[in-house]
Length: 526
Picture 1 (cartoon, rainbow, N blue to C red):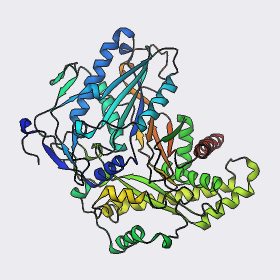
Picture 2 (picture 1 turned 180 degrees about the vertical axis):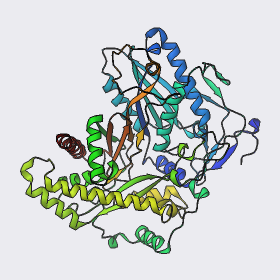
Picture 3 (picture 1 turned 60 degrees about the vertical axis):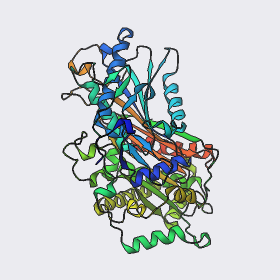
Picture 4 (picture 1 turned 90 degrees about the vertical axis):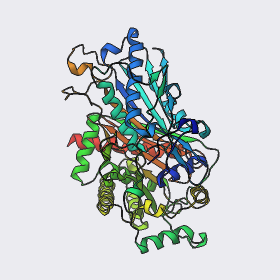
């Protein structure tokens, strides 16, 4: 526990970085990873939409932001000794909100969607201010067009600060704060956009390796040690992504995304339930077919992929005085990875069905759909098994034995790439949070319905997009689906421009988009 701060002596050190935080920081320092963005489309209550209410709108947003800053301590802290082996989180006296919130107001003749996507892509690759400034590594950008009844809110952050599931919590809590009635527009400590933070040291979320035991079996540890340290000439794993050697420069993220409407998503979810699988496992299955189709057996006889998972389910209850209240609402870093292997026999069988159905112009034949559902169901079982095993033989447990993360990640960039793809699904975002139950049905943010029920006066979220900057030593292509309850789903992908051909990446994404649409349409026909 940090001592009571003496501001004259400088910022108080709150705690050292945890394993996940140190790992993420090492990648950032080596320029192997830059930023992460979760963007949401907010519907604005009609009283705040007109031009004459712009000042009130901006003040409402600012006050809601202050409230989530005070609820989630990881938004309040800076880094100390970032370039050493033992960085720490420090308490800050204040935050200048002008460094953390920016409005972009565009004209009615401008292309709103293009502006959103361009801003999203730019922010993925932007670096954060120098650590010597000692300010939190996050920002919010709001894009608004004229008096439109909606606005895009982009949350961009440096991954040591928190993970994607934490970002989803922040958007949901931001929505809750916006919807709290009669909160007023005054906040103690907020003067001229500078927020004075509480003098009492904040309670920071505790890394999982301190909260829980991470048991590692000797066999699992020995296998991991051998795979990490064996000479490269003995590494004959044909499932490695040898088709895509790791390249570090020039650093540039290629990012693409597509959206699936709520009707199509419902149809796809129904198919998933019928075939005992999930969206995450389905994306893994579709990716396997796409890469098997786009790469030949000589380049890629087998594959490995990785699924990002959330450890919040393994956390103890939140401390009684924790402002986030519940452990599943904590904003910090609690991610892990689950690797999957797709052997040469399976990949060859899929390719044989592709060749026999070559006339079908890259649509899924009945034979390929049978393979897809079988692979997806098996992939789901692997994920379920991992969930049931809890923290035993977890990747973060192996991370305990790493003593120098920058050295480790620098060395990883010199080895063969392991994963062809990765899936990180932060789940379903609740976009209709309010202070009372809502009966509002899903509407377009440009709806002209002029009824004035209480629900029409609330904020809501009807779309989300999740994206990662290129991870140099990680998977060749990373997929990031996210959906909004009652609305549709966005599937995004990123890849390093220096390692993956743009046309190849776009072709993989086109395959996934086409096949998801095919599955949805065929499910609706039935």
